[in-house]
Image (cartoon, rainbow, N blue to C red; front, side, top):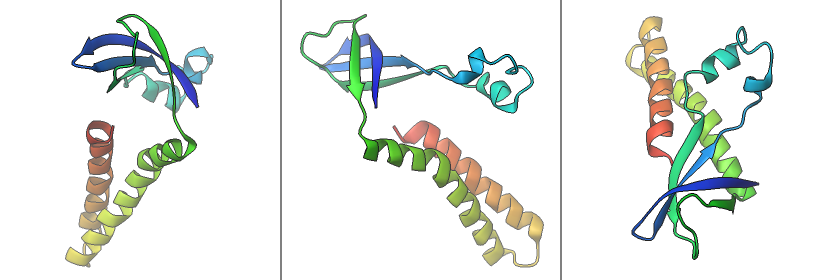
Length: 125
């Protein structure tokens, strides 16, 4: 998969890239009442990350990078399956420590889910 990125900063042989996320929600007429469209309004519509500097690139240039299929599948796993697995792991942990109290089991499950979302957003790049 290939994508174009804008170089927004160059420092110490590292280029900072910005890419606008393209989603179908902005062009759909039902985005105001759709759950996905409403949730999309709470997140940034771009991503910023660092890559090693390519020769001849300057600030404001557009560069094209390619992501392998294996990397794409790994990122999809991190984004979609890891939170689900953390939900089940948290609920299982709650069942071990509080076998007679469902409220604690549910709480542990949601704690695992939200912890995995935070880890995914801030630590997995």
